[in-house]
Length: 83
Image 1 (cartoon, rainbow, N blue to C red):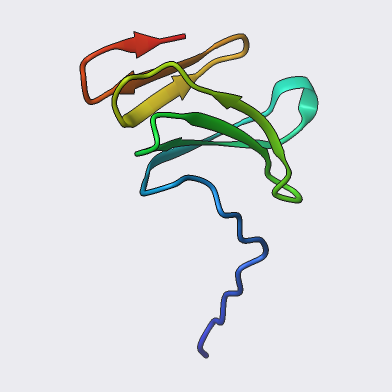
Image 2: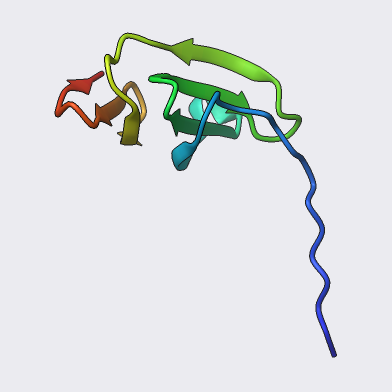
């Protein structure tokens, strides 16, 4: 038996590539957090794809990040970390 998977949602996130993705659930809302070549970190509602927040300030593409309850930590190719 072959399993067929379908995309549930598609979001145009960043100008250029998306370098990393993570999930968070602040206030019991499931969010997707993306990190891109356009030097931004963006937070999306994971259920409908609506953009929640845009964090800019990096001077280089954002490579990855980690989240916890209160902060999103992002790291860029220039070695800088933002919170």
